[in-house]
Each structure stands twice: as structure tokens, then as C-alpha cells.
Length: 563
Image (cartoon, rainbow, N blue to C red; front, side, top):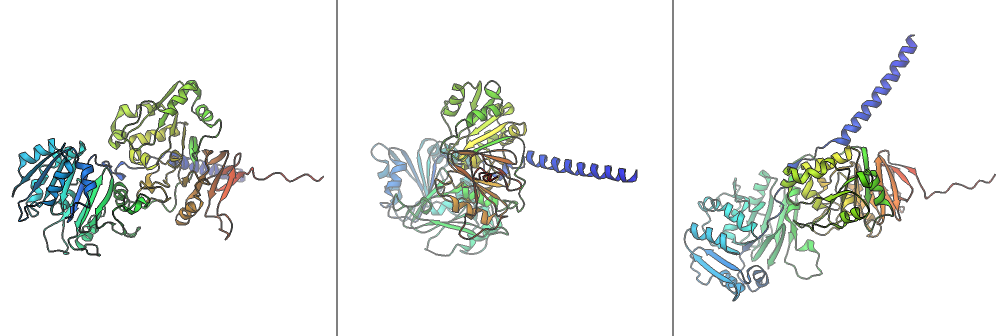
């Protein structure tokens, strides 16, 4: 009796333990812990801000001035100085041309009614040689809403170095050069930036700038060399003139100091990374350094409790796979499908080819959603409504950081996860493949040659954890990139998917479909010099993403029967 009771208790304990593990796994699979505040809301400005740090030869930057001022209304505000020639005003007058209009204002003080009118009517406004300390910032702060509206309508603001630093998020108080000082709030029209304009061409990062960054690590330090212009257009920053701009993030326990410089573009064949900075990427990286490290040392299990993931490597769909997705979503009569385009544009066309294709094939309910407004994705109930009873989502191709910018941590993101939780299907190709993982691979906004993108690694939508997904894999020679990633993050399972190929995932089982292969990088296995550091499986094969083992390998054929 006692032996029987002990056996029953043992069986019950085993079952209870199994249920507990299953319940824990399910809870993990359904977790929505991506946070809205982990991503900036104001991802770009609609206009331009140009900082002039000591450029006097405006002939060298004439193409830039013409591009922003030609045929436009230009207003120039400057403090009366001993130099009556005012080279910038003359250059802007010339750049506006015969069809433009130039108005100059000179005064020892801000003229509120004239500045406010210019901000309403003009296309380009230049502020130079104005009062710097100590009372000028409160005066300017009164116009912050006007400056914001000016930029929102696409205006161009040109700032002399005497005032430009006041337009960042923070600026130093009035103290001797290179002395530590508390940061003072700026207008934040250069979002999250702390700006220092060099008068002399120092090769050393300004100590006051570094002190502010140490105290405010969510800020991006920008040091501009003498005789240089720096322009923020949208979210991209570029240099003009003779010098350079250096961008800095402070080191912390998990990340070293990051510093990169850009110089003016010299040729069309030059790498964009030499002359462009994506400010949103740097702002994201600054935030990322102040929260829990990512990816975690022990990522969540690559297991989905309900539903199916269809992860396509780009370059066309495997035959019949979209029909299979429709069936998984409930069939042509019952499926409620949503297409999510991957676009950097604020607006997309009302007719989307994927939706039209679904409808022409007989799918009764199909639509699309698109926004670049994170607030809309987090609060607009009408925008989110189609997701509430959706049975399938398809993410399009493009640049995957666009998905992260728009949806990460929003209520729309949660509703997307709910589709999978209800047993629906989520699919996507190219960018729409990478975005499905919790870790987001190859998400650099400037070019896409780096598989690890500071500030965007946390940006995946997280339908599956513990993996990093890359696409166009063999066709674009990306094997070494994934090697680099898993060497840095051996806790992650690397997945590289060829074009015309898909990995269909249910629970933790991944099935290979299509004409190419899916490559699995597992750093739990030894790396043998001279041999591939991955397993490549063709169509018909299957792989357990959790246990990291082959379930079925169609490369192998049964041994001949010699009997």
C-alpha cells in the first residue's frame, strides 16, 4: 500500500512538474514585455536644422544653401556687429535668387513680433550673432512652439554657433571653457543632442561635453569642428564645409564609449557611413545603454505556444506557401488577413499588391495597416481595430528598422502578438522575416552591411525568442556576418534563410520549405577549423529550435539494403 502510494505520489509529482514547466513555457510565449518608452516617439523632424560653426567661405557650401533657399522666403536675424558685410546674409540673398524673397533684421534684442511672423511666413530663417548668455535661452524658449510649427511645415532653420547649442536637449552653463558645469535645459529641437562647436580645431573631445554626457547618458554628444556646417534633415545628419562632426555616447558597465566621425561627402561612390549619421539610431543606442542589457545571457526559449510562424528569406515565395498561410489563418472564407508594409514613408498607397493578391485569390477579408506615428500605433483604436479579430498577419520586405520604429512596444505590437496567441499565423519575407525574432538582425538605418546594429538589436517584435534571423543568406554571402553575431552572442541560435526558402515554425519545430536552404548556427557545438560553423538543411528537413537538433535531414538517404 505504501509502495503503491509512493509510486502514485511520484507519478503525480512528475505530472505536476511537467505541467508547471509547460505552464511556464506558455506564459513566456505569451509575454508582452516590450516597453513603449524604450523607443523615441519623435523619430524625425519634417524640416531641416543647419548649424554653422564658423564657415566664412559660403561659396564652398553654395549647393547646400541653394537647395534650401532657392525661390523661397528667407528671413535673417542677426545681432548688430562690427562686421557690416554679413557673409551668410549675402549668401542667402544670392541663394534665394530672383524668384525668392530675402528679408534681413538687425537688432540688439529679439523682436518678438517679427520673429513670430517670420516663423509663420518664411521658408528659411537664419539666427546668428545673437545674445548668448545668460538671458537669451529664456527668450528663445518662448518661441519653442513656433519653432516646432516652423519645422513641422518643412522649414529650414540656420543657426550660428553662438546660439546653436541652445537648440539641443541640454547645454552647459556660463563657465570657463573646459570646466565642469551642470547641464541646463535647451529647446530640444535637436532632439536628445548636446552640441559643442569648436572654435579652434581641437582633436580632443570637449571635457564639458563629456561631463554632461556622464550625468545624462541618454544624450548624444555632438562636437563640430571649426569651418563646418552640420545639417539635420529628417533623421539624417551630414557635414558640409572643411571640417567634421564627431558623435559620442558614454561608456557604462555593459558598453564601451562609442564615438564616430563624419566628414563632407567627397564622391558618390563613397560609403554612406563616412558622411551620414542616423540620429534616431544614436538616440536609441543612448537609451539602450541605460536599461537592462540585451540580448540577455539566458534568452527565453524559442517556442511558440499557439499558432504558426512563416519566415521567408526573400527573393520570392516558395510555391504554394501563401496558400498554406491562408489555410492556417482559417481558409479563404474565414481568414482575416492584415498586410503590414515596410516603408519609410509616412503614407503608402491605398492599393497594396499583397492585399489585392489575397482578394483576387478569393480571400474574403483582407486589409492593411501602416503608420510612422508611434503615438497612433499606441492610442488610435480605429487604427488598431483590424488586429483585434485578425487571424493572420504578413510583414512585407524593405528595411526592418521601419517596423521597429513604428510598432515596438505599442498596443498595436501587443495586438500583433495576440494574433499568434489565439492560434493565428504570422508571416513575412526579407525584412518581414527578421522582424519576427525578439533580437533584430541587420537593422542599421544607414546601409545594411552590419548584422549587429547598436540601438536596434532590441527592436524585434518578438514572436519568437532566442534566435537571430537573417535573410537573402547565401545569395548575398552573409555567412560570415552570422558567424560574427553568434560569436558575440553564443546564447543565440543564428538562422540564415536563403531566397525562395522558408522556415515554418510550430511550437519549437521548424520545417524547411522551398528551393534553398536554412542555415542553423549553434555555438553549443564545437567549431572545427576549415569546416562550416553551421548546419544547412534543404526542403523537407526539420529542426528543433529549442533543443537545437535535427529532427529530419533530407540530405541523407537510407543506406542500401544488401540482404
